[in-house]
Image 1 (tube, rainbow, N blue to C red):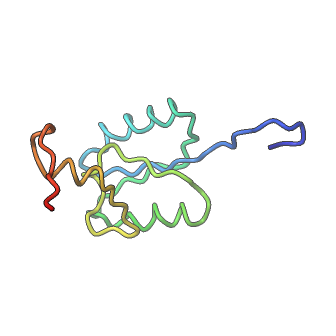
Image 2: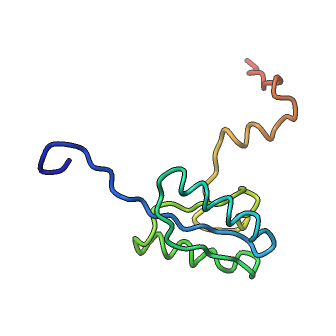
Amino acid sequence: MDATGSHRRLATTAVIYVTATHRSRHAARCAEDCHRRGLTLGAVIVDELHGGRWPDVVQRVMAGEAEVIVVADRDELPPDRTPRLDVVAEERRHLSPDPHCRPRLLH
């Protein structure tokens, strides 16, 4: 809240992470998404090292240079990255190819 009592939204800065393989297609798509969501684009990091640039992305967030990491597809992320984010709902979707099939609780 500012001095007038109204809520001000601070600009949020994003860093885009793309692999070199998908750079042309995914970088533009991510930049458009940042613009649509009102994010300030701080950097585009192109990883030509099979995950070797991920620490650069994390460092920018830890240094306060960005608050959001934008990727076009979860498959672009290095599988052994840290920190890592696991979303339980996404894992559940991968359990069964049939979206109508739900696990049963056994008593």
